[in-house]
Length: 236
Image 1 (cartoon, rainbow, N blue to C red):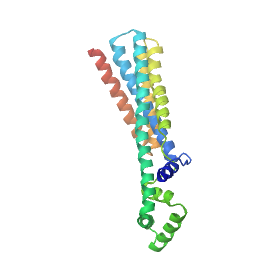
Image 2 (image 1 turned 90 degrees about the vertical axis):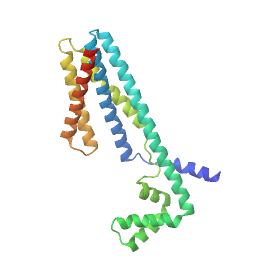
Image 3 (image 1 turned 45 degrees about the vertical axis):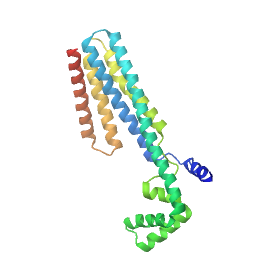
Image 4 (image 1 turned 180 degrees about the horizontal axis):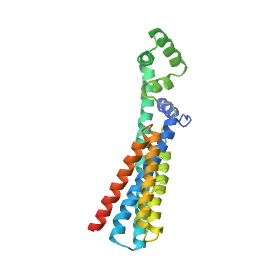
């Protein structure tokens, strides 16, 4: 019973939101926005080819936008919650190992610093000092690259995905339903191309990737999506 209370106390320790958590929230936002754009334009193109009724097109696009936004949010919540639970389980496991196998845990820290090029003697001194002052925080950082108390927040990821998917889907929906009939197709195509280019750029910046390749890749996916759904609409 006492051990369970100690585990609960450890898991409730709060740290400042980590950079990784902030990046994960941004990642969820970028992915949500991209999904919102492509799913909504897919439905809009299929329906708009099959019917010219603006109200039907609008309702179909809006329904898909809401479905996509909540689907993305629930998926992010479930995914990040699972990761958070795994991180907490690792903390509990390491807390128990510190009680039963302290020498082995200490050796893990020594090996960690030796792998970084520190001499065995110096690594031993560093490990003993750190394990004496903050053993659990040290071993969690060394073995899992985690900061004690700083877990990914599933609610942040879910809300980020929810709002970004909604915002992303609004671009093609507004272009298709608010533009004059003569310009609605070109307006929607331009809205999709610009918005997926933006999400490609943001994803590349977040992942330290090549922006031109990311933008080009997103553009190709967006164009293919529109072609496929336009074709589906003609066949209906």
